[in-house]
Length: 242
Image (tube, rainbow, N blue to C red; front, side, top):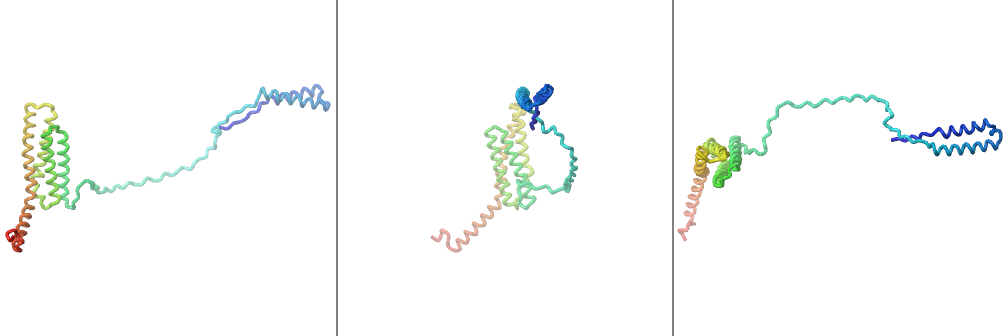
């Protein structure tokens, strides 16, 4: 805000009137009359200045109209064109990558199945049943871990992968649906009992599936032991020579 001082004109008018009246009355004809007129006008000016002081006004600087200067119109920069060429879908980091597409697909299905079993187990409060499902989960993880290390044995789990595992998950999903009805009676109770009894058989089947994968390993172990025993015997390193 700018301040502007506005001087009062009344004291000035009063001084003018003093001189005018003194001139009319003839007091300005002598030197002494002029001096006395000066004194009177000074006194009148000071007294009236007290009663009619100068006014201070605030002037808003924004009131001053600035000249309208036309700004040059800015040219809009053209937006960069988006590349519409379809890009290949980036592979997720959490997906297994072994360099073998068939093995990758099997391991991905296995990971999804294990996650589904875990999620279903979280929805089942029954302690005994939950322990059975946990055992199924562990066996499933072991089967896929073996196949990852021995991809040449992928063919041995085809039936397990395409039928036994998805059917087991389907039974657990049906159990959760029956359980969530909040009552065990009639058909609901019968269906839940059948699934509960079936889980023991599922565990045995999964155990045998895992065990069968080690059949070739046991054959190799047996062959290595036989060769080692024959070499030890031929060199007299067996216990019979002592």
